[in-house]
Image (cartoon, rainbow, N blue to C red; front, side, top):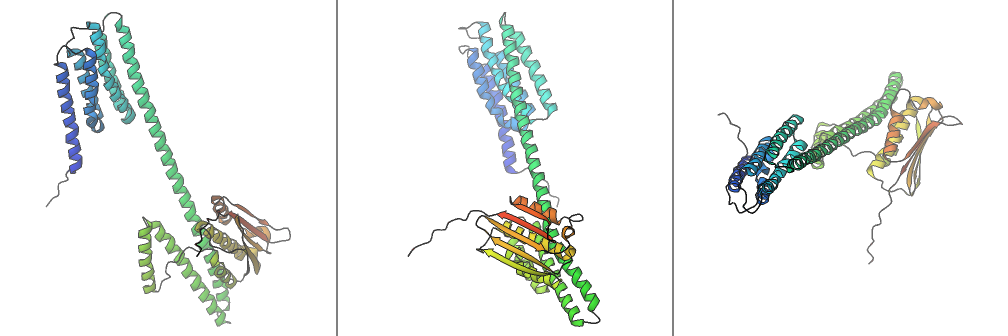
Amino acid sequence: MDATPTTPLPARRSKVMAWAGGVLYLCMVVLLVGGANQASGTIHAVGAVLAVSLLVGVLRRTPLPALAMALFGSTAVVVGTPSSPYESLAVSYQGRFLSYLAVDLFLGVIVATCTRRASIVAVAITFAVQLSVVGAFSHGDNLTVNVVIALLAMAASCAVGLLSRERREHAVALRSQEVAEAVTAERLRIARELHDMVAHSIGIIAIQAGAGSRVIQTQPAAAREALRAIEATSRETLSGLRRTLVALRQADRADQAARADQADQGAVASGQAPLAPSPGLADIDRLAAATAAAGVRVDVCRSGEQRPLPADIDLSAYRIVQESLTNVVRHAGTGRCRVAIDYGDEELSVEVVDDGRGATGTGSAHGFGLVGMRERVGLLHGHLSAGPRPEGGFRVTARLPLPEPVGVPVEVR
């Protein structure tokens, strides 16, 4: 059985109400034109302006037909309304011309919302009809004044419509620019995360694989330890990659938590690495142990009051240390380095120092590690310094401002 697409009931109801308003407007115009002669032309014009509000629904759905109906109704009021015996013919027609104010209002809406071609057609038709009627029914010296007023009214409505169009287009352009900048920032964030996470792990795996291949025949126990380190590092990297991919696929945090739980359960059942929370400074010791397994001893020194940090600062500090240790393992050519973490009152200071080959330790000429660190620190409004030490080796120092602690009232019993 074929399903025939139907218009939703609210949409059909809105369409019926809109065109019912259009029919009612035409009925009101007939009443105004055929009304008693006692009312002045100005009263009839005001009635026509008020009656045009019945066309708002048609204007929203089909602007050009709404303008045509308003133009027809206003012209009918000007031409067909009988003159009052209490005012002259010239005064009567001058009052009736006020009915075109509603047409000018509709014209401004069309210029603001419709395409340029539709706007040009609407302006041309309105210009021709209004000037023809005003010119035909103006008398004596009033002709010039009425024509000028009609032109000024149309020009004002078009100017307001153009201004509204430009503001809307500017707002759309700003929103598009903001979306593009947000997408670019997110791509950079993902690139930094993947680089910092994968580069360190791959470096450790490469070193352990090389060491294991060299001693697999002569020192099987050492080769087994290297393979265990490779397995642990690869599982940790896999967990981080899966966490990143899952986070990218989630539409909201509730779905993310539900799917992460399902992924964890499936990973446990299949023996895969489960998803883990984002790393932070609490994981520095584990990172130092992995780096030591790659042949570089890491001395970790902490100072200040250790306390929970905001997630973005905690993750960025960890990634800076991780990337610095990766560079030491790959490029420094030394067997030892030092990591100093200072929990200050206003800022967190992280420093990684080695006594290796100095400037070649950054690897910045061929990678994005230093660039990523600068981007992370810049997003947190911190300061990063990286360069060779006068006494030899390389130093990376990052200072990240900390938010002011929020005082929590303590209940006194």
